[in-house]
Length: 126
Image (cartoon, rainbow, N blue to C red; front, side):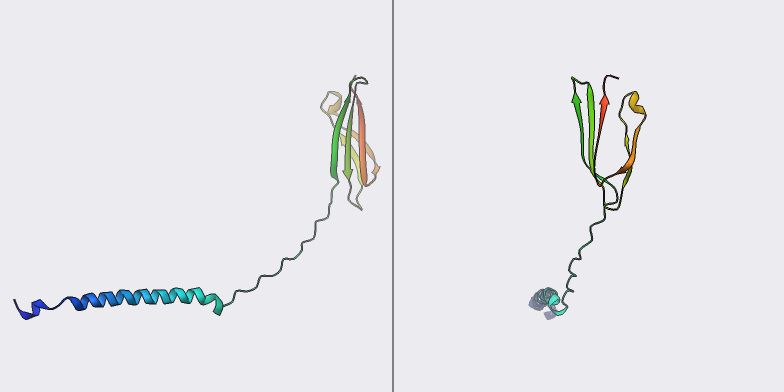
């Protein structure tokens, strides 16, 4: 064996170990730098929320519906209450119920007030 074949292997091992330590140190430094980056470039302050206006009510809002049956008088009373927006008016109310007579809608025409209460008594004997 020649003397060149018996070189110690310690130097390449130390070089790889030193390279691994250097990669870890540099990686840690990059992570610390990224962690501190927001301090160097502050985030923009968010704008305060602006209040959005409540949309105006354009149509009447029905606030109550009911049907009451009177067995002795053989009548059914249909009732509805509604809130009409200011400046708007109700020109007509249509009533349709599911019977042979009720297949034709009943129209009630008149300018009605803003607080609308409508009631219709149906004779159940017919």
